[in-house]
Image (cartoon, rainbow, N blue to C red; front, side, top):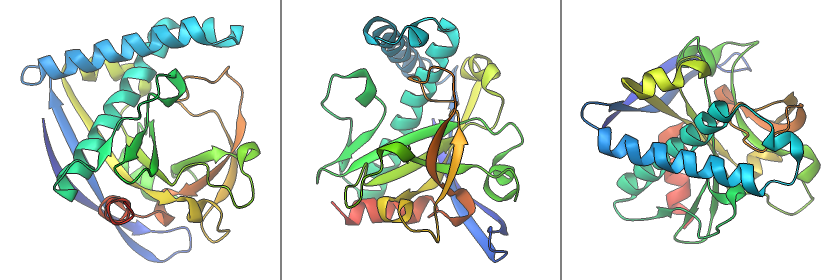
Length: 239
């Protein structure tokens, strides 16, 4: 495993020039086989927990391989963000939540009790496309709009991880060379500020609790989001 910072340039949704710093993690199956095997085991375990505990029949009657892959990529995304935050802070600021609920398995909490939601997606056209393509750019995913309550934060921070290939080739990359990009995030305040957030009807690729239909979400387009070092430093400073 190794990581490095990359800079992408383009224009934000307002037409202003923007540089965006992302962090790329690379895993090689020949070198990182033990680690990747542990991630795969955790993904399979989480998929089994979801299939056994979710009451909605629509959630249990799904392609088991797709559910496994969604859980695995989510757990790997969480690991990469935890690794980056702790390395940047110089100490163990970020950790996995103590809750045993499957719904809390993919996410982080800080030493100061701040909640960080980690979401992942698969932009097959690449990272720059996901960041800056005006009609199709990706977003930092926030809460389901129906769960937003005035004066009440759903999560303190929302962060993104992107896999630059089609989701149906995840296992191929997992068994060879796998790239994961950490591409910034947004604060709860940004999710409630009309200058940043939009509302979109989405079916997130990594939503392992989705029954297949679209829901309305608060999102911050990536070109308007905080880039990876900036959101990391903010998370660290708020502990």
